Amino acid sequence: MYSRYFDEPGGAFCGVQHEAVQLQNVRICNWTGMSFPVLNLLRTDLRHTGDSSKILIKYTSGIVYQCFWFDDREFDYWIDGMKSPVADGCADHPRNLIMKRKTKND
Image (cartoon, rainbow, N blue to C red; front, side, top):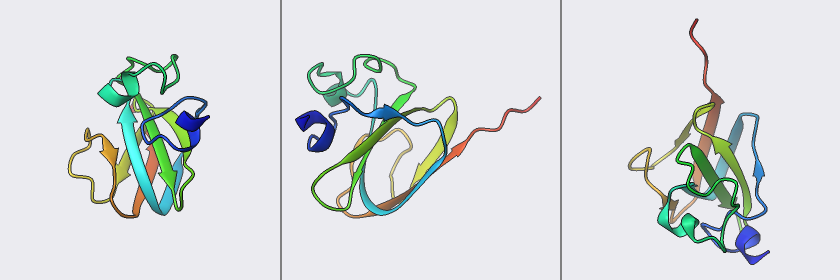
């Protein structure tokens, strides 16, 4: 339970998000299934470990984190102020997240 609610890269017990999400003014952490801290098997969901297309988002406006995984092949996402779209880690101050379903071009 510590991994789910208090550990920044801990993705155990976090659900998979299948709908677009917008978060506003919260501290946001983002990690891929390939991120070194996430690869520690005691911290994450084994279903997503080693999968570079799975993204873990953890966020909080206090002490306890909410979290979800999503597949970056299905969604585009943007975190304001993030230096690189592939950067892992946690923001020092509140940020916004916009996640949108990718459109398929026929």
